[in-house]
Every structure is written in structure tokens, then in C-alpha cells.
Image (cartoon, rainbow, N blue to C red; front, side, top):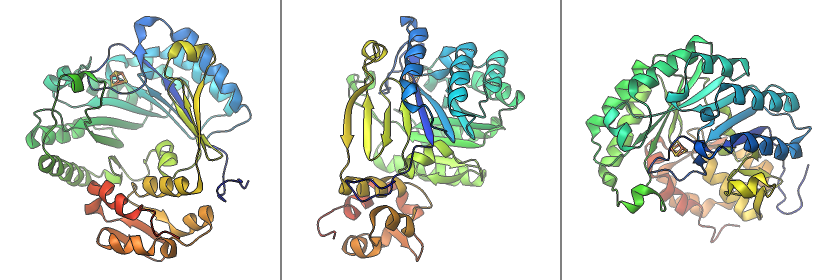
Length: 377
Ligand code: SF4
């Protein structure tokens, strides 16, 4: 289908994001849309989700991703019901991921996920240091996280990812090394994410004036993470994401490729026909049916900006032919002046454009120069 506003070729979404906002407690650094599980809204919320999903009737998805919040806080039976209905409507996706917190994962829960067709779990490990886990307000220990991975592996879910956070207040290079050594102890991981802590406004850490390590230390930490994970066979395929070959997260690749995606749930954003729809962050309004808060139609220039900004996060970058397919022009011609400005940080061959590995850490600076639209034809 051709759209009318930007001249770009648009496909139908092949990925569905489902937001589960419930958490047992609120972490002091968290800026995600969330509510306490103790509000007791979960049953009505799941009904509202399925109601909103009716707009996607007839869509088939390659990936379904339940993120949060804490999807595992719903418990195995409720997740089975939700996923059972979604897969009845949309078919079994190739990749079905559920984000889990370690304290929710016991053997019956792992079995319920498996029975629901889940074949990928992303576990919020954060760090192997129990002292830091307490400071981060987490409800698990390193031992519990190890046990959770063991249960998931035991039931046959063998695509297992762990999320880590670094740049914690007071954290040293040696602490990060300890987390990296911890990756080995999980034994069954196929994918690891390492995100630098951002102290976002309106969080408890922000109010408390929490400071992260200085920028030189951060750069050293990132370098160590990249080097050590590569040594363990986890290859960086996106700025903060590392996978064993063949285990890259297909759902997240959809975002980084700037492909369209469907979404349901409080605070979630979908992207279809060049329009981003941002959903209500107020759970009561959402459950009453006020799903979408605002619609942002992107103009052609914003689409180009987003395409480049997202695709250049990937180690592989983007194919020149894909840029031409979407925007009906030659990237190397249109961006010639800007490419010259950042030539030391880009690899441009006849087929693809990507950021040199050593510049991925300063990607934002590269993008500022490359995406300066002045002078772009
Ligand atoms: S970090 Fe995760 S578990 Fe903690 S409050 Fe945020 S969404 Fe909930």
C-alpha cells in the first residue's frame, strides 16, 4: 500500500506489543507506565486489553511481546488466558516474549508460560549484587534469579534473555565486572541487555538527587561490557543488546528497523500508516475505553529522521536499497554534505551504512551531525 503523505511504502504491522502495567512495588528509578498490583485492577484490565485488541482483528503477528510493568505479576493462569485469546485471534507468533521478574518464576509458573506458547522470556535481573538490588528496590536476590532461569530452561523455554542495569550510583568498574562474571553463572542465557541507568525526572532517584558515575567511567564500563560479552559469545547487535548468533530479539528489531507495530495497553505506543498512537497512562480512563490519548502523524522528514535514528542503533545499520524503497531517493546523494561531516564515524559501502563499532557509544553525537536537515535535498 502506498501512503499519501510521505511517499513511503507502508506495510501492515507484524508485531504486537502488550503492556501489562502491574508491579508489586515501585522501583525508585522507574519511569515506565505502571500501577501497583495491589490496586486489584488486573482482571478488569485484561478484559479492557482484549477489548482494545478487537481493532486488530484479522491481523496475524510474527511476534508478540508482553512488557511492563511486570507481566509476570499477573500470574501463570491469567497470562495463559490472555495469551490463549490473543493467539486464538492472531495465530501463534514465531516469537512470543514475556518480561518476568525473578521472584514470580517458580516451576508451575514456568510450565504455564510454556503451555501458553511462550518461547522467549526476558528476565529483569538488573545486577548480581544483592546490595545493589536492595538499593534499586527490587524484590529478588541473585540466587532467586539463577533459580528462575533454571525453571524456565527446565520446562523447555530456551530463548532466555536477562536485563542488566549499569552506571548505578557508586558503582565501580569492578562491580560491573562482577555482573559480567554473573552472566556465565546463568548458563542458559541466549541474550543479554545492558542499559545505563538514566535518572529520569519524577522518579524517586531524581528527587533524592542520585548521581550516576562520570562520563569517563561510563565509557570504560560500556567498553568492558562490550568486550567481555563478545568474549562470552554474545555479540552486540544494537547499542545495548547482545545475543548469541540467531537469538536477536525479533520483536525489538521491528522497532529498530522502524517497521510498523501494533500495541495495546495503558501507556503503549503503536505505529501504523505513518501515525504513532500514544495510549492513555491513566489506567481508570484506559479501562473505561479511552485508549488512545493522542495521534501523531509523521511528515516525510520525521520519517526519515526516525528511520535513520533507529536503524543506526543496529550494528548492521541499514541497507541503502531499503532507504530508497521507503523514501524514493538516494541516501548517499541526499545526505552527501552531512555524511562528509561524520565520515570518520560511518562505514559506507555499496550496500549498507552503519556506525563504526567504536562510535556506537557516542551515537547521539553522530546523529546530531548526520540528521541536521539543513542542506538536505
Ligand atoms: S522497574 Fe519494572 S518492576 Fe520496577 S516499578 Fe518499573 S516496571 Fe515495575
